[in-house]
Figure 1 (cartoon, protein in one colour):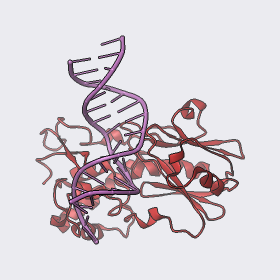
Figure 2 (tube, rainbow, N blue to C red):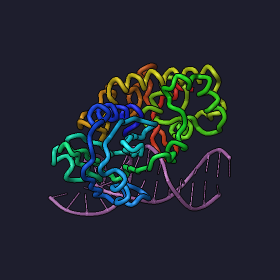
Figure 3 (cartoon, rainbow, N blue to C red):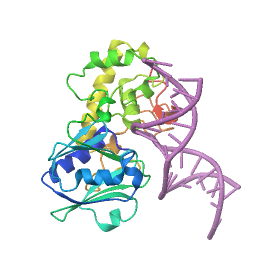
Length: 272
DNA sequence: AATCGTTCCTGATAGC
DNA sequence: TGCTATCAGGAACGAT
């Protein structure tokens, strides 16, 4: 599933390939792709404009256009932005297709159709921006800041780490991996977290995300980058999807449990 | 106000 | 073989 490192990998390709491209044609093939915004309004918003820059914020991709308007897009579970796709890659499950004046194409392909995009006129603060917590890799977001953010709530740690208003960009894979490396139980109440534990979580978060970005993300089920490429971090996973396998630290079996309707993987012996 | 549960989607896979 | 049930899960939304 695309989380911060995967979205960063997509953004890296898009910001290399797209600046300067002028949008000539917009085809929205799945009307719900633009959510509350009518596809026609989305098309009017971006047609004829050129792409200035592409950035990532949390798990969102953000496209800046030459009139200062923006497109915010979320891949959700199976969404892919594909640059220069072959017809076989976008003829099925294609939510939207852009054609540039240059003749190149950019497709949003999404088997499960949860991915979304929205166009914002200039000077508008997108609602996504208001609803996102700090960036995990922002140097200003240090262990102290993480501690106060977590300890101010009383929820199970794992589900709180997934809350994008608390911290932007973590998803199910990295939340499990971070808590394993930090040796903190996913079931711990966030308000019981000590400062040393928060330091361990912060350290684990930074080093895991940095390596995962270097590896261009994790491909477990569906994730592909903008060149349709797989990530490499699946070879570094310690606990995710490894129920029953021996814990890398203590050799006792990794356990799967369900929190907030999704799987958590952890070691009951190492994580307290 | 904060937290919890449901919903949206489809393909792969397990089980009978 | 062919069918059905289950599972994967991010975030909006409604309920508590």
